[in-house]
Image (cartoon, rainbow over all chains, first blue to last red; front, side, top):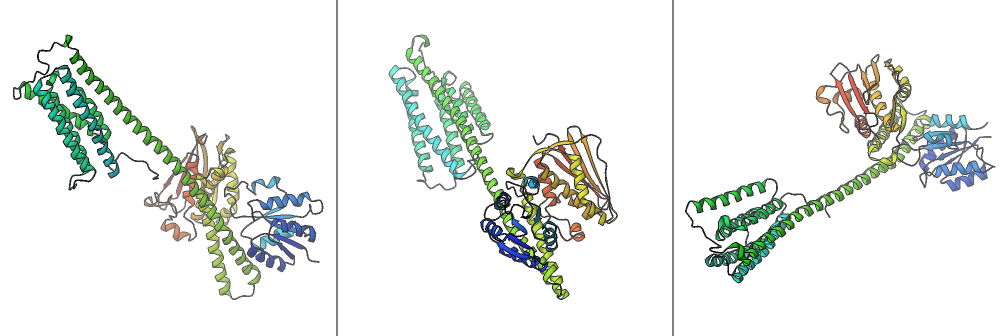
Amino acid sequence: MAKKVLIIDDDFDLVEAMRITLETAGFEVLDAQDGEKGLEKIRKETPDLVILDVMMASIDEGFHVAYKIREDANIKDTPIVMLTAVGNQTGFSFDPEQDADFLPVDAFLEKPVNPKMLVDVVRQNIKI
Amino acid sequence: MPIFPETPTFSTASMFRRNRWLISLRWYAILGLLLGVLLLKIFEIGSVPSILWMTILAVVLFILNLFYFTFVSGKVRRGKISLVSLLNLQMAMDLLLLTILIYLTGCEESPLAFFYVFHIILTSIIFPGGFSYLYSLFVVALYSGLLVLEHGGIVTHICFFQDVHIANTPGLAISVWFIVVVTMIATAYLAQNVTMRHRRVREKLEIANQKLKEINKTKTTFFRYASHEMKAPVATIQSTLMVIEDILGQDVDDRVKDMLQRAIGRTAGMILLLKDLADLTYSNFQEAQKFENLDLTMLLQDLISDAQPNIERKNQKLDFVPPAYSCEFFADPIALNKIFINLLSNAIRYTQDDGKIEISLKQKGSTYVVSVKDNGPGIPESEQANIFQEFYRTPAARKLISEGTGLGLPIVMRMIELHKGTINVFSKEGQGSEFVVILPIGGSL
């Protein structure tokens, strides 16, 4: 059975681009447009990996979602790949690369998303 | 409200204000003169013809002031006389009439010569620059002229106090006392006026400066957020194009692949440009900066090892002998990385294959000196001043490498300024380039 990947991102076009890439690589792709719907889907569908955008409605919504995943006993082991914006030194209150040590995510992927790297990162982090 | 406060130049509005102020002061002077005449009458001192002339002088001054007033109020056609000339006319006439008054009250015997003093203070308030020196020369000329005329026998001396004995005439004492009082009050008023103007201008400047800072901050914030907002859609376009190229476009025509690659190349360039634009504002955006103690040697070593694949690809040789002593530096690591990433990647990009790059770090006195030197094509002397300008790329650089934002060195410059340092370039065409960065230790504290 194909592994399930959930993409939580409000950029619909980027979701479609990633969907085509991952489906071609043999994954089943689900998506959610915001953190709340994303959490709902994780609990219902138990995906094998989550791709999470840092910046959605709020500047750090992705982090809050990541923490909530780790706090929920049923889904806390789901691997998380965090999508970060281009050039992180925009003066916002956090720096994902620097703060990675205490962030509960497994990998970072910078936008623009290179299809080969996306597939590689998903394969490396998904539990077989 | 204008951002810049009134500056001490001849703006029309300020000329009107100065003229009106002088006219209003003159009303008081006329009143004072008439009061003086009245005092002399009451105490029955002073020569009678002189007192009559003094009254006539007051009337003349009144008529003149009425003329000035209607002129400034625009009730008289102004013709060619400018407001500056009117100011000069007023001041010169006042000094002339004062000299006549001094003559009428006994020339060198007259205590009215005191009044020259506050007229000179007045000129320093209403005229710019060295005008008050010119007017003091004018006063000296008037007073000396008067003395010469009198002692040369051309005009007869008026013995104003005649046979009055100073000691036993209270009226005379009161008159002189009156003049001293008027001089003191007028001088205090004028001096206070100067200080207050000065203070007001300084306050306005401070407010304007604060406003400019706020405006600059708003601009910088807008700039950073705008470039960030633009990056998101461009990144998505880039991601979409890469999906077409890598996954959907396997079986397409070579021309389609070529077009796709061009589009991907241009969006990549656009993303670089937006990143650089954001970096350009970094030094103005304090919220983003984080100063900490770091090791310069380690920072350079990390950068060099990151750049190693590019150096190897061009078969270049890079030398860096780290100093034996530790180079601790209190700085913003992001900014410092930008400085040396840009200098190093320029050296790699513009130096030919098999070229040589040397990096050195030394402590000299209270500074760290970092040099990035290559044996590449060099920068013509005529271009060296331009390379730190935003979006400027030398024709040679454009020819060598078509991609480039033209923002690399301007970013370097600003990041160095953030650390109160300087950068110098030493280069000759065909003989390589050396960029020397001097960073004062503790300069950022």
